[in-house]
View 1 (cartoon, rainbow, N blue to C red):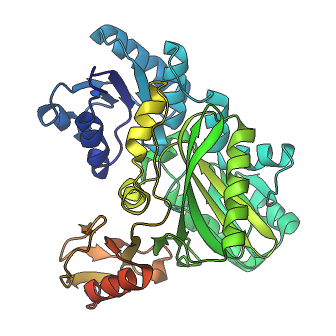
View 2 (view 1 turned 180 degrees about the horizontal axis):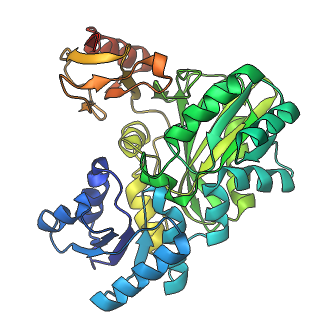
Length: 420
């Protein structure tokens, strides 16, 4: 990577993605970040040597946005060697930019099918993959009709979304109007820019069992690496994540079955390269894929995978977008265990105290604490269905028992919330 390839980053995402761009620069990439005017990532041009930042409007329509980015690159005189994104909102646009420039990337039609949860279900069924029943929903009447066909329990979720925004379990017809109103209030571009892509919903069968994240690296259509993280039970009736750990400690045969289905699914969709993030469950009826993400997993997953398996997902994505062979040498055994715990507000009110105990870091990735809330802030509890995320703790220990113990020590004091 010493020759300094020019790599176009389509959509920088949230500020936590800064770690990705610092790593790319550290391994020799010359970054060209393209995002909408006023985006926080413009400040990176002053922090990362030889980085270029270019403004382009973002509408949520990948064809329109790709055209704007191509125009901006041409106007700026950028000759790209590769195109990538780590941001869910931008995967469809990035695929189109790469294709238009004749650069390595996955087919836009594969990325589009993964990005839309409706199209994911439709394509999976056509391909003969095990697929929960699902229907597109555009109105309350359509929700009632879908529920009559699919049955209960079921899940309402947005066609486009991330981080379980707008996902709610429903158990009876009586709850449909209230859930529909709640989800409609969430699934708007004003609430989150991700919904610029569309605000349709779908209703699908509820899947029982344990959920997992399967991180994959593909090269020439073959899977050359997998890492599995085991999710903790979500905060139903919402599906807000509460945490995860890796490596998993679930039944090994069941986990292997989910990994095999995940690989088979992305290959059948037409993915050929890069780092992908598949979410799925080991259910009472076998493995099931929940969704396919055409990009690396979010938050600190790349640090977790590197700590446990000594594999750098960011470098793997860079190599893929430059059509360079992967140089992976994963550890044969887990080098440590990692626990990730998400702290939500336990009640609605005003945050009065948010305290964390100190623990000494132990190898791997050490102890990372990301605090998102401020003292005095109004917060929502589980009574609001979607509780406010206050903080996220990620740490490593020599084994899973030790990592769990350390996390419990850090989180000894629960957040104190006063009535508003």
